[in-house]
Image (cartoon, rainbow, N blue to C red):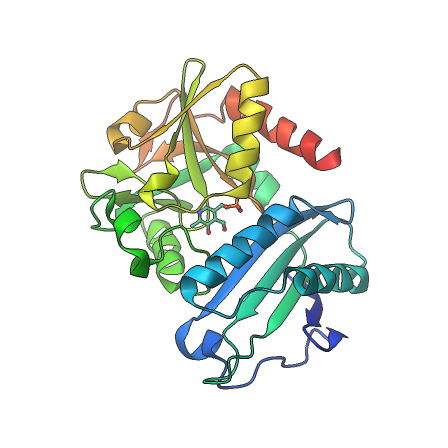
Length: 284
Ligand SMILES: Cc1ncc(COP(=O)(O)O)c(C=O)c1O
């Protein structure tokens, strides 16, 4: 992704090459910041209100000062105006600010859409399952584990992506103990048997994907039943098709799991239908 524009709370649009954080911002020192990533279609960020609400929720869970939603929305539009790119990725950050200051830093970044996504969608991705070693329902009772929170402490998620690549896959899927399927490092996970779509329940402490919610609505309109729950990896492995969902990658078909062919080994029909429905919703 290439950075096209940056807007900073209290300053507005700045040169994207300019440094914007103090060296002692706790976002850097300890990963204490909340963030959001959304896709921009025709110059409009998709489901911006939902992303802003999630940003506020993440900040509260991390213990950051309350998010100024209007300021963040304003920064988003300032950055989008500066970027002049109708199809882009918008990221919003709300950091703890300088150590001990209590004054958060708000940032909006606009970048290009990663180039390889449509090639990946056409061929489908390979997943590697990686255990987290957590009891499936632990994060529901352990708020300090920040389950379902989008914080900038994503080094583990990025390390999981790297491990998946090391195993010859494109992406990872995290497992709780008992091989319960959770989510990917930056995606929610889905699979299909007949007309039923399965996806892990939010009670497992996974991120409440904005795309996931949009797909649940679209699936009902397309005549699919959606079942949310705690499902073992074997259930995913024996499905007819699988896919991941995220704001940037949208609906990404899965064709291989742990080096075994999944379903027909080709991108599936539900992934295709839901991708089309998502694009239609974004264009509406
Ligand atoms: C851990 C995790 N799960 C799921 C998702 C998908 O969420 P969304 O559809 O809101 O992009 C993300 C997005 O980055 C994520 O980081």
